[in-house]
Image 1: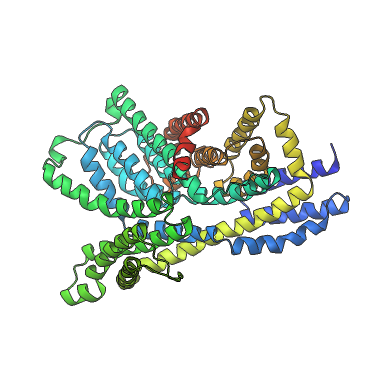
Image 2: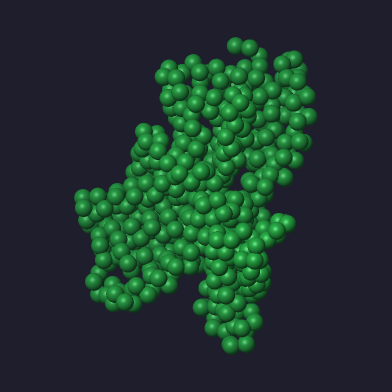
Length: 532
């Protein structure tokens, strides 16, 4: 083994040891990289000229329009979490499914899927559902293992159901690597985050179906562990239940359809759709505060419910106009119908701005905006700082010839492409026991993705399988973050061992989902290919 190969192995071991010790991720990556760059220079196996590329890499990260979607989707998720949308959804879904055995568990899965499609933030979802659902499920007689496992697993759906932060980051990394690979074979086909969103939609729904099927089976095998709500506590009025479900479900569903629909249909990029989601979440939060505190007529007209509701309808109208008419202003010749549509669009934009200002005033007055902006800044700073540290790590790793070593290792795997793919998936799964998904995305994926893509692996299929694999990192002991989030809000009678035992069946369900996508690539590729 050469000195460069030895240094590469020691570099990876050092980074893993530093991360497991609890040291700050970004500084562990950057510090280890600089240490081994100096050692490589000392032994004559590393050219410090590689570090000269670092400023341009940082500039590329900071000017990347796709990554602007990260803070906007985080803002959207935190705003919805603070506006207590989850509380309404859980109560309503509980009333809808509570009459059947396992109904509360099914309602938690459904709400987890809805929150995943509207927030994409695992920690906030697990904590919110843990605070609201876990005491109720335990009081109804649910097994602590099943209750805690259902909540933790449902919270992790934000990793695979778009819009997901991990899909954005994975999409950006894979897009860059795929572009380099395609240029090598002179057959460049662009890969966007929207393609990965489309590819992850069906597998995400498959996972939701697997969770619900598991709860139905457990309700049949162990009925005492998943009881139904007592008849005297159910909402028996069908009309009242329908109105309640429509009132609670309609606003977040409209927001989800607006954001995902605009991406999947090609009306907007992921960045543009994230801006729509941030504005929509603000409107929804402001409108919900209106229900908590009734306004006087003058207040409602100026800064209250009327402009906020009007902005919501104006947003839908703007989508409809953009789908039917060409609203570009830079054309030399604009037909009369398009000009009328443009004028109407200006009016709708004014209504949206008015409603957004009214909603911002409400959420600021209630202290929601301050918390949302602060948490968005913290999460975004963490993500980008880790990305910068991982960029320096990647430069040093490749400067030491690590990419060539990985390529030789994967190409030597028995079974060809499938053997290499299995080795990568197994490695990511094992690393998920100890490392966060962001660390694996920024450190491991850029190393292994080029080799797999050169071997002919479809980038969308690969990205979706990696996302499902990374999702398991939130549930696998000892460092499953969803388990830690739930442990922090769980009552004392729910032990840590019970939480771990409850999560294990859902880890196997996620592996089943991963196996289904591996065996049936069309689950990941059918929708994006149909939309192209």
